[in-house]
Length: 172
Image (cartoon, rainbow, N blue to C red; front, side):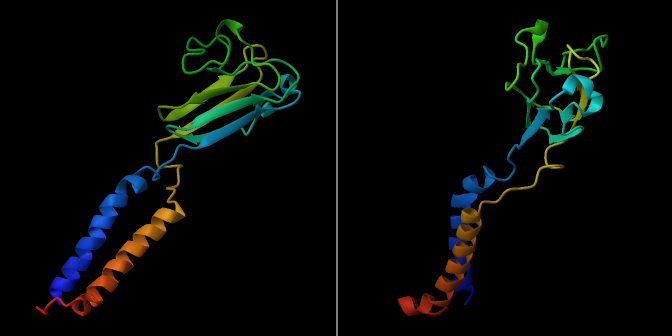
């Protein structure tokens, strides 16, 4: 009886090990985070970017898209006099190229923290990205196929173990 269980468990373990790379590659997937620069943004202050604040995880790609009719920038910092202005990200270093209507700018966040940003052309336009460590804001994604394959492997091993004697293997 124990031999049957051991062989069944062994076969199940082999299948799980074979599927592990598939499973591991889907555990934590970076999420795309989208922010829109609102129409009339230059007059909207902290409502110019939507959503605001933005929640993301380390490794997430945040993309700002200009939905306004005017050009803008997306520059890290608290305003034009911030000594660290543009240090973390800047859509338009030296105002080139500007983020014109319909265009997008993306940045991948590699560290946790709070990242204020603003538009250099319209400094009253302000926003914040709150970045959590990986796993805090990211939900594991297990593809249905992987879950079904693991379930089938476990049940297959159990069925094999119960049918062992029908294959002519002597009882132990």
